[in-house]
Image 1 (cartoon, rainbow, N blue to C red):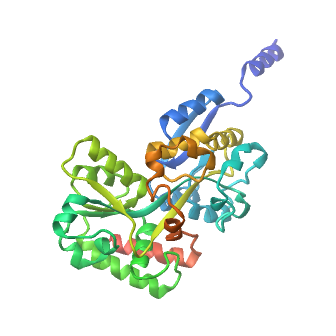
Image 2 (image 1 turned 180 degrees about the horizontal axis):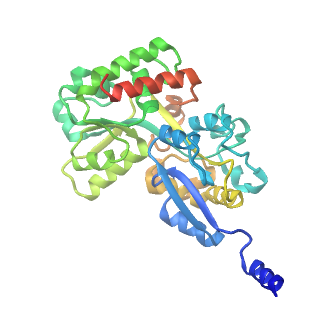
Length: 352
């Protein structure tokens, strides 16, 4: 009888104990509607958790956090995760839709042969601003000076925020000073840190979470942020009929472009669902929803017919060859440089 009951229990149980996919990603990167469609297709549940910066995600993952199936890091976060043995190689046979990706976004130096990663969007780091306020003050946002030059900042003191992200803010300061955002020269870092320290007293906050809202409400006038967030801020201001316009533009000293990818955790509880989810997100319509919903750029060629024409006309969302040539993708930093950046960032935020 006991053997019979055990057999019945096994037959009644699903092939896996829990049909749950655990997704660790940027907030709002994948829309609820897309998630619901995947859940319906796979007869599973998706549980999402979020991070606000790549440094936060790396700290959590390298600190031993487990239980995730799919992670959505910025591409420069892939090498350190791979080096620490936290990623498992992808089974390309389970990803037939990989063929839809633009070759310009595959086989990069950050993950040769896409051993671990599948790119799903990209954003540009730039300046968003209250166009009415800056025009009245005679300030041009086409230079990083609007974020770093004390003479300019004196006119907008307390109305500027920057991302709470050392990789992005230090990178912008490096560009402002005429250097590559990927420079490992200690002298360049020192110059960038000095620039940030001089500007910091004029900033309202380090803010990666609510700067869209603050910009939309008119509480801040300048934000160093991501193109998709600033696109959303512009839409929100228009929907709320604010008496001002939110603009965003590239800076003449150069801007960063960061692609995000899906990877699978080395100890993913459900690597089978992870592969199904990634391939699902590579379908043209599903991939396009990322751009249509949050205004991020898209590396998926099959997505283009489904992306709103109005978005395809925006250079920072769909850059042409000239614009793309001005964008510098962040690369992985060596361990010594990463430690130096993190130490400098800690001191900056402590006001030292």
